[in-house]
Each structure stands twice: as C-alpha cells, then as structure tokens.
Image (cartoon, rainbow, N blue to C red; front, top):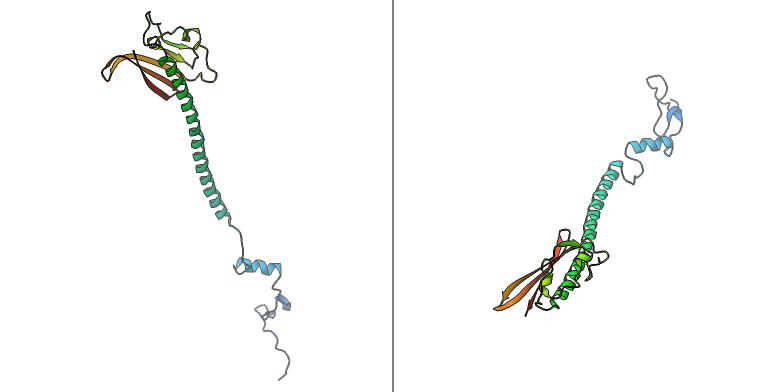
Length: 197
C-alpha cells in the first residue's frame, strides 16, 4: 500500500466531492464571503440583527397616532373651556354695573315710567332720563350699552334684561326686587337686588 493522500470519493457525475473545509472544485471555503454571509443570515445564524421590522413600525405609528389624537382632543377642550371664564367675568361685570346704577336711584319718583322693550344700542336704549328704580322695569338691550345708549365696544354679542317687581320681603312692604340678567349665547348671569323705601 502506498502512503499517499487519499483521493476524494467521486460523486454521481464522476467528479470528486469537496471535503470538509473545502469549497467547490477543491477551492478553500471562505467563511467571510458575501455569499456565505447571505446564506448564514437566511438561516438565522448570521450576526445579531438590530432594528424594527415593518410590522413593528406600522404598529408603533398607529399607537403614537392614537395617543396624539387623544392628547390634542383634550388640549382642544381645555382651550375652548378657557374662554368661558372671560365671558363669565364680562357678563358679571356688566350685570354688577347695571345693578349698582339701578339701586342708586330713588325708590319711586312721581311721573310715568318709560315704555321699555327690546332694542339695540342707540338713542332708544339711553337710560339718562331714568330717575327711579321702576323706570328700569322691562329694560332690554341687544349688546351692552352705556347710560347714553352708546354700544360698549366688544360686547355686542351680549344681551341685557331687567325686571323690577314689587314684593314684601320679611314683612317689609314696599320693596322692589330687581333682577338683572346678562346673557351671551346659551350662557347667562343673573343678579338679584332689593330696594326699599
């Protein structure tokens, strides 16, 4: 027997099969070749992969979108609600100013009270000739008007209604109940005041 290296056993086509550690046709197999790396990745044995898959990215985008939509909706409600205190303060200031003006007038002065009705600011809304509390009964304006009937800038969307009614308060006759209502849209502020002889 010879001490020569053994020949590889032939394959089905008669060519020798590569041995372990050899590539095709007897070339050495390279572990770092691009083809080898692709094969290894395809089998899941490649270097550790980092990042997100497309499905994970789509799910993350959907979750973030839903969260932002909820946050923006809450922010919108907060902003819309922050205007209401300003409107409430303006209505209250207008109602308090008119109530003070009314209650500073005398209880009753001889003479016929004016005929009041709903009117816009202007000469018909003037209160400069009102000389007693009863003159304000039924006074109603569209917009906030000063004592001369001129419109107060920026308050044209508000409305004012004054009612004056005689009542007996805790056994005291000859008392007038004054109700001042200032409204804007569906919001309103109502103040009650009393004027006795």
